[in-house]
Length: 441
Ligand SMILES: [Mg+2]
Image (tube, rainbow, N blue to C red):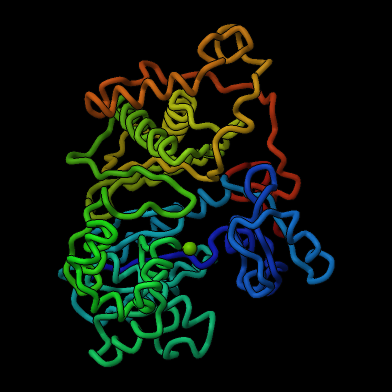
């Protein structure tokens, strides 16, 4: 069985850990430049605030409904994420980090009551980090994701599902009739990888619930949509067939993480890994015409190598301005790797994640007047056409294979703070900055 562990309203929950007065109030977190709502507390959802809704459209709720808006504090969220992940990984033999606030745990070969294990995990993460989570168990990743949705919804909206499923939901523990009833109550758009367009089309064809989808004819689905949706149905019926590469990307994040075949101890090797992963996510970012505002890098040792000392650091770096340029992203990732690395540890896994995503194009076209000559200043010929350079890079790598063309040296000195994104409502970096550490009186 797989479990999918997911923090409820991650960014808002991180803010509430250090500002308990926000508990119970409607809270939203705003994207880069305070433009749009990228996270909402349940109370804000109940006010009708939509995901990605522009701030100016809901600003009136500040006065009328006490809505609190905060600027995104990715340094804080990244740090809280690694605390949560390192606790979660203690509960199962294998962990796969899926996004900043979600991971899959592989419980194959683990005996006993999974619901009890899920509850123990939730309790520990809440007590040790202050973050509320939901846990879903299923035979495939698609089912675990869906079970998580059920666990979360059952808790948030009493009456939507049986109360016993709130917080932790194990599809494997339900009998056939109960499972069918859950699937009948769940709209097809809640299935992992089924987006708004696909679900509208499915609805037109009479497929409204997950139950309908599970009964559908896979061959005609493949013809009408794609092989991916066929795989989704096979997964919903309990057969594993999604590989890492065709699993849907998380919303609002792009990520590359791998376990190493052998433990890695040397910094140059890890810098190389950071550079490769950052190049990969940069390419994915450009495919969706996005720009990233921050880069999150993590490495971990293995808690199952009992003889080893443990070290699982991470660092989130905010970029001077949102970027989709491989050189900028690789530089940020390698600098972060250098900062978190400690000699003498056996690292078994690393990841690079792009967060705070927005559309490409606006602010990164600005010239950096404070950059050294030839490095992004007005006289840099490459700086004037970075999009074309990146197009050429992608075209060559697509034609001749990944890694044909790489960034040679990624190490750059930190850029001067010539440009500051608007972050007027940002909370202190409670956990990652000495000056900001909370005081207890
Ligand atoms: Mg979440």
